[in-house]
Image (tube, rainbow, N blue to C red; front, side, top):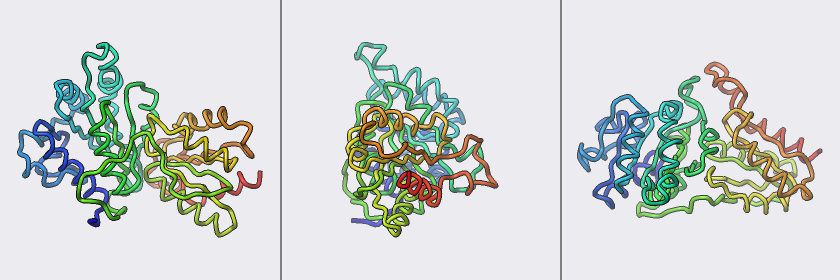
Length: 325
């Protein structure tokens, strides 16, 4: 297997798709010759031509309107929103058009060939307009799928699965890990099933759950906890919508404890949905309250980024609080 960082893995998945489908198109702001602001689409315009990999005007609503139209005609539409923070002008197109296209037509028409890639989260000193994690906004919307990879291997396999899925998929890419996360990735095609969480490491005392860039944080916390005799089961949710309730329920039934961590603000973050559901399903098995270690209920700060983002020490403190309850 080749050694790749997350950007190379994403580029590989896109390359395979473009070769596989003569009608597939990649489009977004600066994705052409420039290769995107993070270079995720580097070399693809040269390989497949300007008619298939091209820049759009600076209008996210327009990008998604075009994407819906292209996907409706059966062509794989690979749209990039340059930063997840910029996705809000396209919110109407995604929530009212992409998500409802199949439903409103009685299954006669669909935009299942639509994949929306966008980098999310902090870690690059991007401040309040380049660091947000908006997954919970879209998780409230039936008709969409939401996927978040944690490393290069997951990124390629999940992106290929998202592209092949029969539903519109929002693929949130943790920008902090674009170049920081490296690993062995098959050069050939492969897919990872959507909607299935992964148990990264098994444990007996407490379940730790996260997704995307927050995974390395909870893995670090689990390692620190193990040094103090606490066994943590670490789970990567991977798919926000649909999310794998069964795997989480089975884990919490075993450990009796759950800690959910995400970068987005704590109030109405997706961790709240998980906590409510697990409380309902596992009430008689819980040994302590479900805890959330999340971002603060403030705009994403530039100078205080390290204080804002949940880190391993905050998660470790929650682990101790849960075990000692």
